[in-house]
Length: 111
Length: 111
DNA sequence: TTCACATTTGGCATAATAACCAAATAATAA
DNA sequence: TTATTATTTGGTTATTATGCCAAATGTGAA
Image (tube, rainbow over the protein chains, first blue to last red):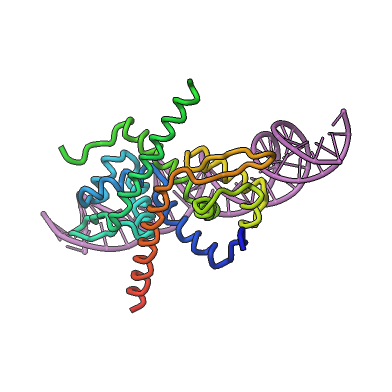
């Protein structure tokens, strides 16, 4: 039976997936993921790199943490975050591929 | 020099990536990607599957198209969409892995 | 304890998304 | 041409996301 209506259960599953993607779908949070993939950083370090209010940075971190993408570890009075799911890096490669295709398209339109 | 501030140029790059992820970060659009990975579908078919207003479905499709993730092809008075970037499927696998980790966490908390 | 530093939380203003309905456009059929 | 079907676009409203400031919390040092 083709074209079957999506069930409630399936929809719930897609919502869960979308929530993870939403956590990644912000430039600041992508920067964080990239930096944290190199090595753990504390909030203060990330704040300097990003150049936003520390409270903003902290909230972005908590979004990534809630999604299960990063982990936090307390060291003295600092909190160090690091990337938990390395596989997201592969998928940023795919995002790059999509961007390359976009460039091709733009060129094609201009011709 | 560690912890260097992110430049404007780099930020622009991350914004472009975030835009692609944003396009994917919606349950309905994830359903579309999955269905279109199986075979092309016209708007009407997708509308039935998803059970939303056709105008809503059409707008979701145009978001995916603008991101460069799907392509459209006109056949008579119908428009068929299909998945352009197959690599996104791999990365949905990673999303699944993250979800599995989330489940582990929830169980750990309960214990 | 008191102070200083690091991070998180609450509150609020603004911007971005999403859904629906109605109207417009495109393509074929009568 | 007119009618019919398929899709897109415009407009409105409701919800969600984001950023900053100020205040609260947590941790170690004096």
